Figure 1 (spheres, rainbow, N blue to C red):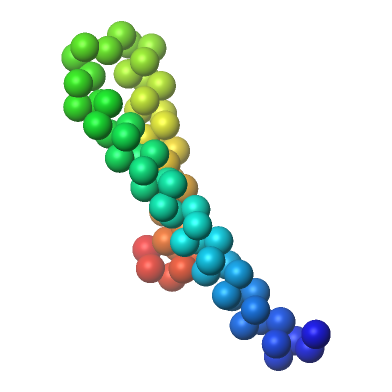
Figure 2 (figure 1 turned 90 degrees about the vertical axis):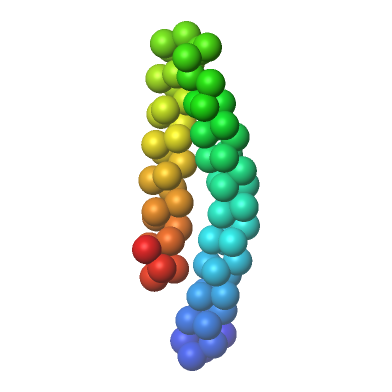
Length: 71
């Protein structure tokens, strides 16, 4: 495959990968944030764990958006 064809194919694959990762990541972030709405009922360890999940999911979303040039 020539370089002229390789770049568009790579960009298409990366776009699909970003899309495929974004959907479950959005669900993960939404579920985590829903759980945190009731954080007063959670123990400290669970709250901290959910906050860490939320933080990492937001970081991953930012990376995906930056890789698409839409940050």
